[in-house]
Image (tube, rainbow, N blue to C red):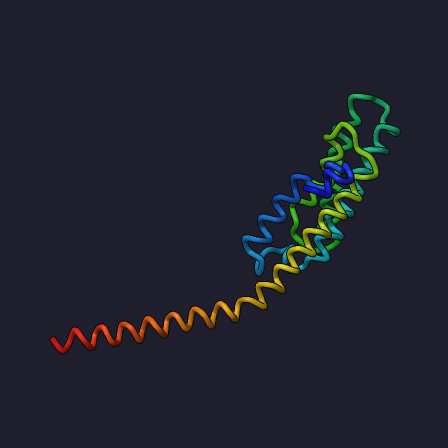
Length: 165
């Protein structure tokens, strides 16, 4: 959020990024894009760049003014599908990232760059989190095992003292 305020690029935080983040945190071992994070960066960036390209070029070639918006949206979603099939990955937010320029009022070259930056930052934070969890998990496991041993020991003494009476 601080980065958005500092450089003024409001699309560093875009709606599909929230979906991506939630899924990566919820199921890091089974989430398709958490398993292949570099593919996530590539797919999101190429999808956003294609959506922006159609946003810029379709109004120039469309004869009828009222038809350029649906054509732009259709081409953007089709582009997102092509990206997903080409990379052989299941990342539905790519479709949203490619469609967003078709429904926004003002889209500049900054949109695909913002998608690249924010997705890269997300992946770096996710990978750092995975390293920290991998480092801390054995410590937590040992602590839990020690607590279980102490509880068993306490239960053993409690049950022994009950039998005496």
